[in-house]
Amino acid sequence: LLLLCCAEEAAVIVAGLKNTDVFVGESATFTCELSHPGVKNVQWWLDGSPLHNNLVTEISEQDGMIHTLTLNDVACHDSGTVTFRAGSLVSSAKLLVKGISLLE
Image (cartoon, rainbow, N blue to C red; front, side):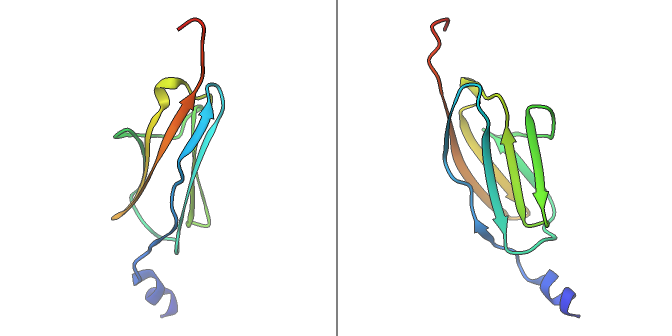
């Protein structure tokens, strides 16, 4: 009964995403912490495009409550708004990729 009771309780975002500035070629990590596990339909977005786990994009989850996105080897065009969605919960932050290239 206790588990049922807690599962029905609406989850909230305990710690939302924070704006992040990195240099070209570095990694950017975003973390969102929920009040309890079991929230369905968790998804990460960058400027409205859904992100998926691959070599450049690492998506992980710890204890079902701490959700982490790491973007590896970022480029200037990766700058934008990172959004975490879990059910009806939403948290967003800005990613700014800084870099000066003499070739551009």
